[in-house]
Figure 1: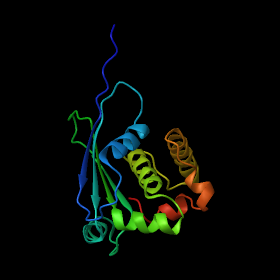
Figure 2: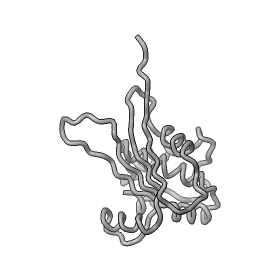
Figure 3: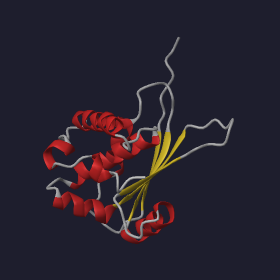
Amino acid sequence: MKEALIMNTITLQKISKIKSLPNKRQFVAWAKQALPPNKKNHELVIRIVDTKEMTKLNKKYRKKNKPTNIISFPFDPPPRMKTNFLGDLVICAPIVKQEAKLQHKTIAACFAHLVIHGVLHLLGYDHKKNQDAKKMEALEIKHLKKLGFEDPYKLYHCSHSSLRNHIK
């Protein structure tokens, strides 16, 4: 019996005016790294925006009138609807650029981390409780290591407690 072909569809929408962004191939590789290696196909959208759009989304969906680095919007299909669509990730390029500078990271390292973090949220992972945060952090570290990035929590003394305020 032949193995099913895994065909993940990752749509990238670059709305941000910032020119020095990673390319589509990088975003796709980061997202695919966090997707489970099973026979289920997955679809998701990654939208890269500027602070104005992120502030509007953060205010509307999280009741915070300021921009944030990422918001994940998991898709909750109606009952009996079969779909492979996981949801949307909206990432604010100016905030990521600022965080990269403050944390002495490359922009690619910050984007990779946020994409993996966001995809894990779309897959149902959360970090509201400490044990869940540790599990999610371990997965992020594992995926980032496979991509050649260092542990973002160890190097920059940041943990999910600081990310909790940014990610839905």
